[in-house]
Image (cartoon, rainbow, N blue to C red; front, top):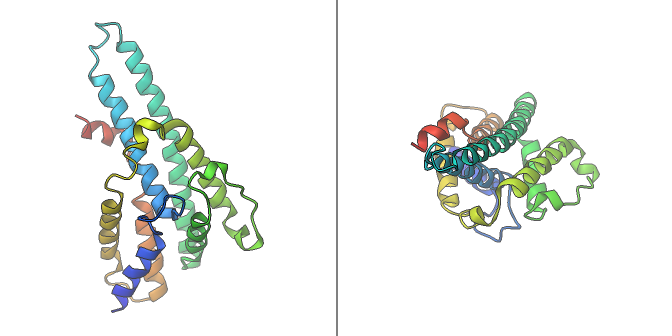
Length: 208
């Protein structure tokens, strides 16, 4: 019964991903960024593969586009990794999911586009200011460099399905843990880890 209760709590932590886009929780935002960024880079890789290796005069243009996409992707990837590792480390040190709860609540109160959000931190949000600023930087890269009309059409594809599998995977880490607070903290850290972007090399293999 306790394990079922934890799983229900995690569902609510994700926010209402079937509601209007403006009410996005932390994990919903990061999952959207992950899948669209990976689609962005894999598409760039495939486009280069479809060129005639420069025989038609387009090879260099394609290679430049791939290099540009790779640079954008890697910048976004290390910023997401930084946020995930920092937040996870802080939760482990405190043995508490409180910071993630506060950050999720803050996300739900913001507009869909975080880079235009007015981040005037109230006293209760001072403890998560590092994370909110990092999220705003991540959102700015995502919105300006990746989320163009071509990819906006696919932003909601399989999102709820992928969230379900993240929840399903996280259930394995809950088993065998005895402390209630530790259970919630470690399960949420497991979910956070799934929001990290894949290494470019792995995307290249998937595109073959």
